[in-house]
Amino acid sequence: METLSDQFLEFHPNHGTNIILDQSGTQATRVESFANGICFSKRPLKPGEIFLIEIEEKELGWCGHLRIGLTAWDPHSLAVVPEYSIPDLMELGDSWVFAITRNHNKVLEEPEVQHAGRRLGRREEEDGVQVDEGGNTKPETFFTDSHLYIDSVRIPRDKLAGRSRPGRFSHILDDLYKTNALPPTARRSRIGVLYVPKSRDTADMHIVINGEDMGASAKGIPSSRPLYAVVDVFAATKTVRIVQVEYGFSSLQTLCRKAIQKHIVHRMAIDWLQLPDALKHYCKYE
Image (tube, rainbow, N blue to C red):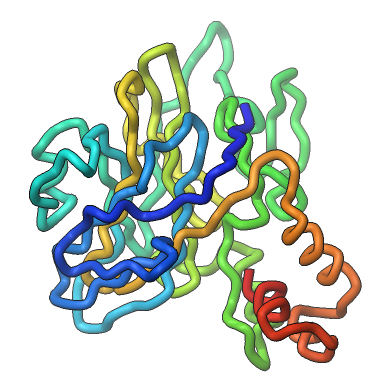
């Protein structure tokens, strides 16, 4: 299943008291304290649609990091946005939030046994080997596969991992991102949340960090009600930005960017081209 989204994702205007949104509604900054930083997606997510954010700014001196998840509460219905996502929002019920840490985000599950062998999901990876639906093994294709597969959901990979800021050594730093070595809580890290249908009325919540699926963080979520993304800009995380993921056919803007990137040595060579500054920045940064 590949979700087709014709709408840009934005943050909901109802948010924590310490949050300020930019004019586009896609960047959220916590301006005071370490709490009251809860944000929601402006509209409910579609099944398999990822709400992807990038950590843009950090704030030293606080313990704890970004929190992300889903809620069945319509943000319009909240007269007061809770101070914390964990535990305040979760105690309201119908909310599932996951705290992102530097090292331990992967969900460990017991192997499922079906008949005489282990049942693997589509293109599920085990010990660096992928197993397809026919049971055939093949080498891991983390660097070459154009999509991330989570059960029946298919997500384009090109936006899932962050990139270094344009600079003298950014083409070298990019190697860290390509090898998924960027810590989840670092600046430029990209973290997303989505839900994967499991039956007509239930779904599993998955967290994706820099292009890697962390597993089902919450199982059996009732999907008969609209589900909104929750992002808690908490403690050491100060500013986050929504990254738009394109499904289906690429936009003309994306096709132009890919054509330019295809004919250069590395990102910083874009500076040598006679292009508008805004286009150069788009080609280097995104």
